[in-house]
Length: 294
Image (cartoon, rainbow, N blue to C red):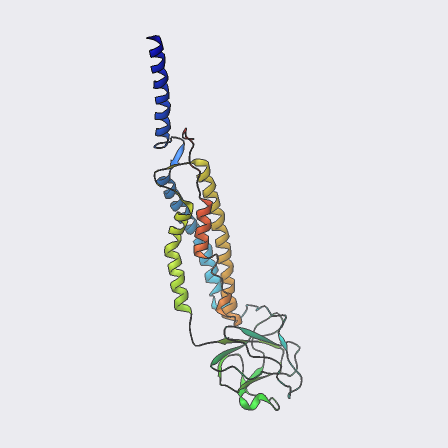
């Protein structure tokens, strides 16, 4: 009897241990259920978005301020083309390809001349006299576009401040500045990429949460350690701060596009939405509780 009683006690003890282990997979008083962890992560992401909104709105407002246009100082390009004092100069610059630009430097002052190579067909050029550290946006420059200005003396033409001109094949662009000036020529095309960019951004916005959930791999009915959830939250906060800083900086590029005749491609969208979601998901690969529920 005593041997049987001892055997039964061992069986009962092992049964209790296995029962406890099984229960630890169902309930953990020291862990966080996956479903609850997901909710905490969603709430944190929402709060971080709300906290960053005032800074982004302030940056956007500053970027779009019309009063800044007269005072914004445009950075210059060290590879800008220097003007020639010879009014009969040969071509000293090449017109840019679509969505690129070329800078013309007449900061030395006096009367300086620029003449382009033959233009590319079906290209629209935006010409603008820039406000820089050494020159004014009201500098005195004129321009002429025709096949006739590909050679010969460059004379005064149309006033150049901020101008859009379409070049036909075999035409050249000639520019004459009589005061210190800095000019940027931006080439554009009639085709717009805006609809596809907007669609791409909207799609990224829709699928980013699903990407984050998929990468993190959190399951609703599993329990995870509070320490790993805290580490996840810290990572999300750091990523949000970095993303806000990058987005805020990108609004500065908006001003360069608006005031300095730069292509739209220089505007950064911050971190790629899908890439950021994957990064957040990787930060939240939570650690499951052990067999004892800790």
